[in-house]
Length: 592
Image 1 (cartoon, rainbow, N blue to C red):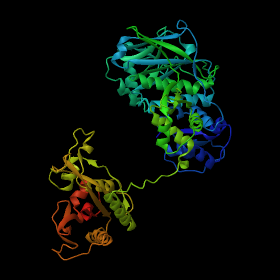
Image 2: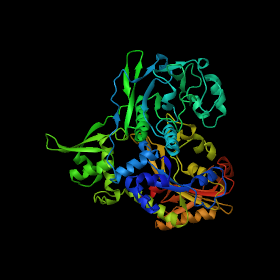
Image 3: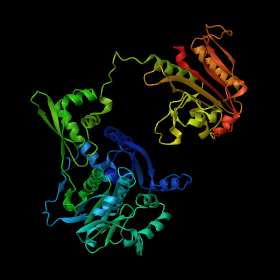
């Protein structure tokens, strides 16, 4: 989930009171967010430069790092965060955002040329009039753009935001797509003119901007926005022009969002204007812009209207497990910025008509409404319900008991991927190709080609990635492997296995043998003579992943259920492990 860094003092000023750290953590918990860290600006810089930590001085600004839900774009800046907390605390009502009532003739226009369909076909725009910036507000405005770019905009691939000082440019504007050599302008923070292809070469050395070049690089045309005088506003999604750069003195801000996804473009634009329209001369009012295409299509943005959703009261009650009066549910929803109107249907069913504001793009389904009721009510206040008919499966209960016992003897549990590469269950274990493995038909990468048939690769990879950890390393895993099985209707079956590994300079056969004996003792299985089917015994094995002469099969009631021994040096080398390891793997379903 994204983390938002805000100055503590400025946040408390916006919340109209101060909190102790414990009080603020409690407020965050109640609202469904989390205070992740408390630091200072200098401490952040020291950490980035890998310098030694120092005691913070009294004059350093305290920074709160707050973890917010990934789909709550309105919480990505101090303005939205503080406003949401004020409404939640009952300090102010839900704001009403309005689009300025101006005629289409006097509206600013954005004309879209057909060539843009080749690269970024959509654009939406808006104007914030009479904005009052100071340094903190300006920095928050820029930070929100960066956070949106990293989040919903998917690093500018879906949406790119451009902000401009409207007093330095003139409408109507045009959104075009031209050959790189035909685009010339002075980019932000530069002093000379560049053609677009020169700019792409120039920014390949820029640590921040070079990661966005691939979005349009190689395309025969680049998107560009001009004003009436052919002044370049921006080369989306790379850089804005220097001519229209906003400053602390900017009063009127023109915002344009170019996109490959129109829905996300509207969400991004709505987030930008709703968060910062509070600083406009006419609070919460946004001036619209008409966007028109050559084929006759046109629309006005932004759309700040509320949309309606019908949610049955019974649905909310059933989902959260608490029966609340209608007026109480409406009050809780109001704390979460949702207007709720209670009504009775023709079938005598109570329901809410929910009005969702433009800031809450995360509300997509009645379950989202129920979740907000639960948050506002308090998850800690919801009574725990135990369903008497629900019992854990025997295999899961048995697995938990095994986990507890192995943890008791000093082993740490790990969880590894159930998917792996085909070589990790074959050549890297000194084995032939595994014909029993289930193959992934469309793997995302070579690391996820097959479903594991053994827990060994995951355990060894864990040690390989943590080889600098203090020795000995003692880890285990209880998890499923999957094998082809013609008897099953799906063609494969799961098997629950236990694997444990001891890694260290003294790791030997007797250490892992001791763990096997302990497991059998806990399970009440006696050690018996070979051939006796009343308990378990061990016999010599010859598995390629283990060292010859230092390995054994585990025979339980006449059936082989596992193998243990010292891992072969070549296998250790394959997984980049420098220390000796002993390993055991047992099919625990055989005990049930």
